[in-house]
Structures are given as C-alpha cells and as structure tokens.
Length: 146
Image (spheres, rainbow, N blue to C red):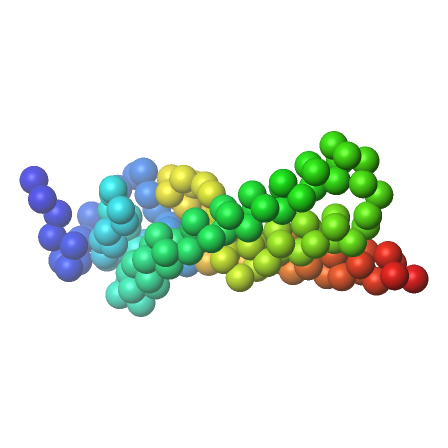
C-alpha cells in the first residue's frame, strides 16, 4: 500500500508522537515527508518543506563535512605520531573540525535518532559545538604566538 504523501492523516500512531523537524507534538493531523529510504511524520507543510530541504543539503554537503573532519583527524594524528609540538597545527586541526560542524551541520547519525532529538535541535547542537571548537582554536593559535 503506497502512502499519499500530500494527504493529511488523522490517526495518531504510538511510535511517533512528535514532529521530527521541530519537535512539536503531532496532534491529530500530520503530514508525511519523504526521506531517502523512509518517510517521517511532520506537523505541517513548513516542517515538511524544511525537512526535505535539510535532506537535500545533507546529500550535497555530507561528503565535505566528512572530508574536513578526516583532514582534521589526519593533522592531529601526524602531530601526535611525530611528536610535533606545534600548537598552530593542532589549532588548524581543531578549526577544521569546528568549520565542519558549524557550517556543515549534518551530523553522522541515523534518521531514527531524530525521533528522540529533532532536526532543529540537532543542528543547533552541532553549531554550538562547531562554534566552541573554532573559538578555542583561535585562542590556542593566539597563545602559540604569544
């Protein structure tokens, strides 16, 4: 049986009671939003459009995020393996990680996780972590030159 994703549904299932995008209660009327391999219940058309936009951005930018995190890890490992006491290199590594989380906030978690922590909150958490990483990287870089 195929789902009509544009139809409003009135029953309220027990497995999902909150919108995966904003975290609001679904109530008695909800919409379906299609992800890559599954569909999710959202509370309104705005959340449906935002979720679909998030999924498209996730597809496009996730590789860039993984590459930045990979390069940051490689720099960190090299400084540790060769006992390089260069705080500037470590700051660059940390800055790359911060950039990845702040500007490309598409965490590598499964879509099922959004049932517990909605997408808006997840993106906010990633941006806070990224911001903290970038600020501390700048502080460490300044300390390196002092």
